[in-house]
Length: 560
Image (cartoon, rainbow, N blue to C red; front, side):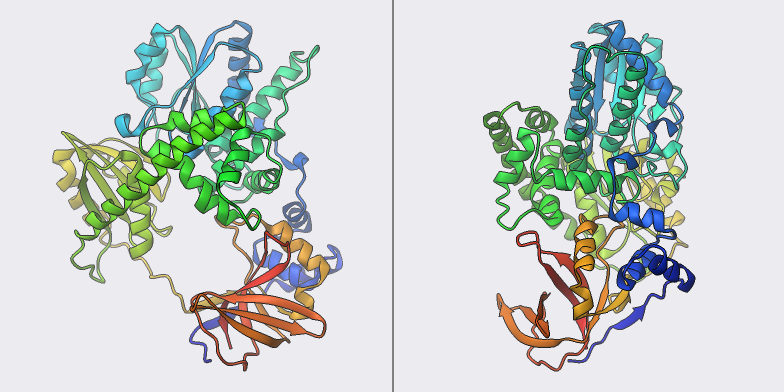
């Protein structure tokens, strides 16, 4: 079999490689992988491979953190009414629940509100302020929303309601209030890329520390925080933030905590997902997270909150049944909407800079999902707009080479509201201005170029013989690498010095190879490729730990 792909070896800095091997005592293969993953010192590499709970950073590096926790402590001591206002995706709902559950340790005067995105759209909406005022609420804490709600914050203050913003989206105009976000720290800080629930975890760590310093726990134990990591992990994976810094710590411990979960909701989610072969990040991403997102996408975020707060297995099962029904409905709507969008594409020329779809009566919560799937299909920025009466709601997903938040900022005179990340954002617009927006974007994107992703290049992190790959220290390290996710992908290994014991065909389209060398064997899978000959001497692929039997296996990308 002749390979048509170009294999490129990534060569690590040789001085750094020598240091990792001689002073860090890393096996050469592992040293190359870690350096090629971007680690430039032994300490950070060890912290990545063998993290400790003590590695969590000081949450007070967020500029407004001390002021925010002091305000919350004042509300607790004064028995003020607090409302937590969250976003309706999995990240926002989980963050809202975690903050609510934590604050209930200190005050009964706390409630939550997660508006229906289907009815209200995304954002911290001023329309709810009279409701809060009538209920006597004097402090609102947002979760995963509000970073651009400058006017709503000012309106709240005019009514005598204080607001603490916790969010992780890009800052367009910082509200004039206590704002808790990793985005106010350096991009190199460990908390810069926290998701909304991750920001909440930093907040409750800081609040517990502050209350401790004020003597709050003289006669009682401080709340246990480790239990929340299994939930924050789900939120972090769901929001697809880079798994570096504290996100690595959250996912490392949260992933492992799910093997013996604390909350009834996670026990039921795992049981109902029918995980016959152990727990993997793929199971979480494809069997669990879509269910948590579906309820919010269809305007029922309260179903997920009730699942999370269930006190027993029976209650959790009842709410999960409701969520699974919503997920089935979401799948049908998504399928129909994708067909409708595809029918608008007559032909995509090589000069197309973006795709723009105008649909009718699509649930707002599904717009981002639709845009993301189309973006992945065509490797172009995708704008999906749903019209409702005179107002339209839009969602944008862009490949990483185009900062669409910067582009959309140049269209703000046409928009009622907008916000989000560089590559994933939403907006609200008068439907009559949609043609002008499309024309403006066409002009702004005229000179942007977007290279097509090359499937013909494979970058190799390290070479290894079969015996080296199965060395016990390497096996242990590969187990530590899990879970994988955004910007933390499995290393690519060039495997050599092996014999092929047998080749089996799986489901008439996959190949399973049993590789051997002396008394050692390794299973390797080549998906959607049939191999018939045994004259293969080199294999490129990614090692992974089989979650069922904890053995090392190999996913093949190419052979020679």
